[in-house]
Length: 169
Image (cartoon, rainbow, N blue to C red; front, side, top):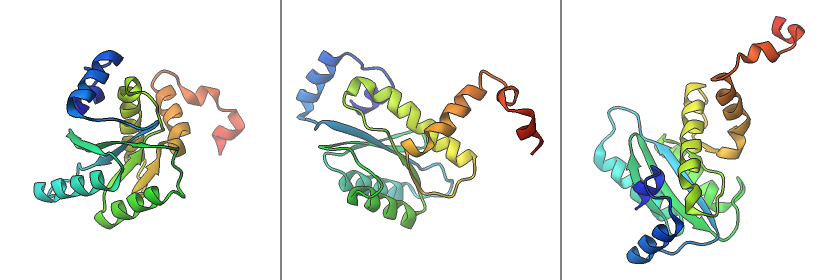
């Protein structure tokens, strides 16, 4: 179910609700995705599975899967999270201890938006890795401007929009 949702193969609200009932899964008001990159060679599969169990267990009503090089955990909250939230601090501490890198998606309220939030979170995570950032954990909202510039640079020559004096710097 989660794999189909993440990859856009299931996007009809009625079908989603039916499938969730079939597996006995109910969700609160605010949904999040935690996307953690596992793409480092030489790591043990049993260790990966243990990390997935721990991450899934850290969050309320968490469901997780592997999708390519990423561990993906969907979970719910009654309210929106911030960097000061105990849950966020615990996730950050765990990722630092295990030397993993992850991003917490922007909040969303409907599973119909999950594919978009997943793609956005993956892009933010990869962009931060490509930029050489050493942060082990990010909130997606902290990288939205960089993502906007990255997306725009795929279609436009952004230097054309920079004042000549700034370009000389």
